[in-house]
Image (cartoon, rainbow, N blue to C red; front, side):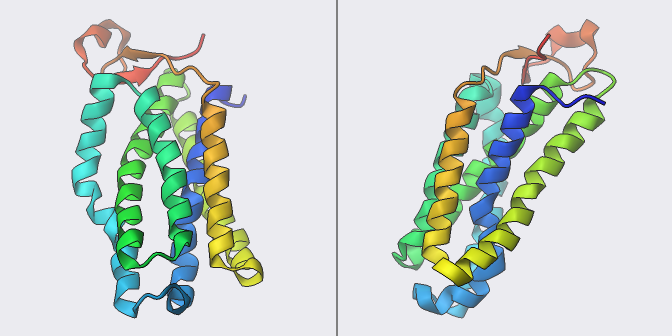
Length: 208
């Protein structure tokens, strides 16, 4: 079984990088919150804020990508994710932290949808499950690396330095996508070639 196309591999790694900061919070925020000037109740609010905002941003992501395509909004989300990740280390108080978490929720709506559409757009009739599984597996490696390596780095160099480092890695992952050209075309949810013109959903074009 061959590896997926280069485009999908790079996109998968980029989305994995965006999860570094988010996953680190779940691992270490319950232990470092006193040093960040937070109260205990704020920890729960911060860890859940990004999920609640997605009630609004998930449908927004679908509408935006349907109208403007995948590449532009997806790239913007990766770059913004690097900013929100670095913002966690500013130690600027609860409100700034909360705003960063809300914007991360917005980013994740676009990142998740864009990643799935890239996997589907690169796949054919016989490998959709494999490509989606590959994408999901690589993305979740970002969580594994974050909680293991990030937790260790937090003990060694501190939370602020670790989270800024993760933000930088996310930024460089966004730069790697700039070289990738994600073409778009319309297909139906069933991916039937004969019905391709009937759908308004914009998906990346499969590389030939």
